[in-house]
Image (cartoon, rainbow, N blue to C red; front, side):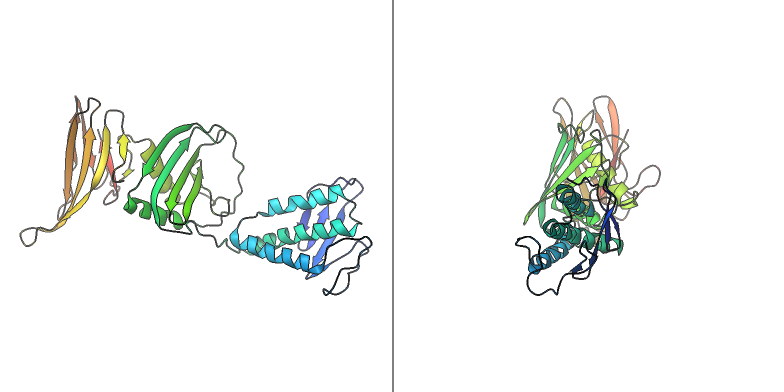
Length: 334
């Protein structure tokens, strides 16, 4: 048996390191260079063989078409495609034409993917093949290696889901970075319930895994805000900028707060039109209070409320540092 490592690819040349020395194979358009440095006969009919086998040219053509489909779907990475090459060479003598053809099959898939990626061909699979998503479940696990659920949110606010999906969809779909996360990495899963079936997006350490299974470079402003929104919903606290999600009960240390919705009012001709945001605050002893913040011609002022001896305010226009909150976020100020 010939022991070999994973191949090195330069253009159409595949070189495999062996104990007995490197072995190279060239893949030319539609032609495979044989161990004798020559080429087999034309594409039509069976390929010449020295042993009986069932491989024919149309089998290789089928694999080339498969490579194109895999590339389009973004379901196969070059790293995965190269593994069968090393296994094939390690298992059989490459002078045997049967494993050579198997090598060509695996190599064809890998080369198609590598060539396309090197030329910047994007993965065409979108973040959301179906945008008719009516519910979202956010699950926070203890870590990648420990799947105990730390927190879980169930969201059915169609307006929030649509806004969140639009922001995710603005991110590139073909993340070029392939990252191997350790068992202690923070993991959050987003499962969108859509008309064509569920769509799952995994978030590792604040980085969204793209449809190509990679990760985008750096932390864009959109990505930072998406991660901050998830963090604020999972762990609400005073001072955090929190998205308005209708019907979602947010558990603060001293109380539970629920945004119950926005209603428009039209005061014409006496006054201008505007909107009213409604919140419900539930104290640990079960006491409830409803707070309404009206926005119109003037910027809305913070709405104060008390829970026991503690005093808070709901802020819906802008933070103390001037960061805009209206119309989709709010803060709790102490």
